[in-house]
Image (cartoon, rainbow, N blue to C red; front, side, top):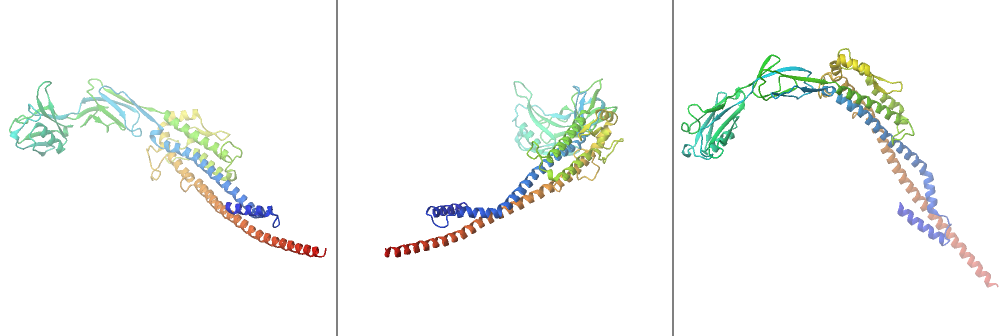
Length: 476
């Protein structure tokens, strides 16, 4: 288009400078006529396109505000987010840790450690070198009996190191090491160590000559296999390791030494401030949404999207009602007479701002804390929205917000509709621009023909004037 305009402008300029044709700027005239026909439509579609683009920004801001509310609800849907537990009372004998906030519960456990779990340890006879030859270099077998099963290990490299390597390679749950017992000389031993617990007891024998590898008939035992034994609130518990994680729900106990005459009191305490902190975030998110909704429907705001949905105020109001209705929504897991956010002190001011009545909240928490947690979370952790079971108010509410911001949600559909209009207007504008160019070329062609006719007329007039003047001169 630029090349056509440039060439036409140059031609029109040359014609005018030579005083040829009509003297009219046909390029400008063509542009003006083409614009007069198409520019009003172009202006209308550009305005519509700009308005739709602005509304897309508005729907994006509205969706982000809803997502902020939903993010808090998703966090509040987990039992662990509604409370925080801490443990105290660990001693030199017992180290206690919380492994699951959801499974653990407040309370005190009195524990005594009466026996630590330990492995069976068998030691060989002494060797003067870790590479000392055994059985004259002839291969032999080592049999490790465990759980009533004889496990035969072939030893081809007949040295202490070769025996250890063969046993370890067999992967029988018995670890073999070669240790020098002397600080200055050579006093090498093969040491076999099983896993802790009575169930992991084992014995060893060999086809090598007696006393050439292990003492005969009874190998030297460093320690016997035994279970740990603790008494928890009067109940005796035996386990094969010194880490016990299946006695107190959500807790792991690491046994270090015997407690002696004094029991250890492991105390799990409940910190209720975590729930209040999360609820405060919910209040903030709802009020942020309300401010955004107002800004989107009010012209002249400070944000780039201010007033962008002023023509869709009814839709914004519909979304706002859905958000505010969450405060009165009934939980699928009511508990202890508490079934909604209002029951824990949430309410709206006359100006429409959400707040928590501290007196009502504290009263509810003091008397019904576990019921509040159940009402909000269904006492679940990381529950799927697609789970068929009851989910608690938090997840119930989050699912409801999916009808706004989900892939088929109403805000998503509104935004997609606006984008479709933008695309349609862009196509229409491209069509109008092409029409504008076509009209300009059409008018230039018509005006060029007119210029040619006018110039021919001028040439005829000039010729006739010359003839008349010649004839006149002949009679002077």
